[in-house]
Length: 345
Image (cartoon, rainbow, N blue to C red):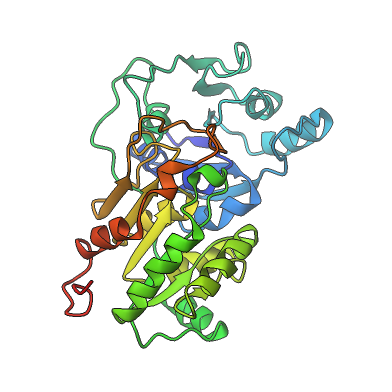
């Protein structure tokens, strides 16, 4: 029987990438499924590249905004779609209100913030059984009490070759050398950001080995991108804030390697199947690893980490400050094809 399901999507870019295996699983379980996703504006370019998603709907509500009257109006518009089921991925109380207001008959999600009554297919989360975020998302596709099928396929995004050429031309990017993407931002906070001076030293080493280095991020990352470019003495091109997410996806698709903090763009690079060096400080690769067979995780595994804090509780951020550029460089050598220049120190 044909089903129509709505997913209340995550608010973060990385989480949105990690939701794709859920969408794929829903299609496996319901062969004629029409899948819609309700999501914030900054994640919509991702959904446009996911063939599993028939249509996306803009979630106009930011963090902390209750706005009950507006939620009711948005819900009544969604009600016209006639959804059979909704899967609510965020754990907040607010995220479960619109499905209730829309009168969607089956409302699936984890219990979260006192959501009894809002969800009528409420599941209890067993964090030991489902340690990874992607597993938690996919578990919501399964009938209650059914085990989660493993292994979970990795998310996959594709780049658009015509858009790649157009964007590279617009930005005046040199494609004569192989490119390494650096993603120095992390929306969550400074405790997930490798220091600018380390990125800059690594950029100089890649430049000397014959690689171009492009820095990717949002407008919020432009300042740290400028600092890296300055410290790298011209060895890095700062594209932070110069591209939208759509263009960043295409340009990262041109790169031979990505070096990223634990961030949304790290998950984008993994989904593009790029060789990836993932730098972990305050967060944990056990919970949100890059979902790729070609990723190397670099972490000091200090006693105080992972703390999952936005700012270092001790004020030193040793988990990233003491992570030397050579660690990322050596990890990259194991991922890139052999090169006489790259093997030199």
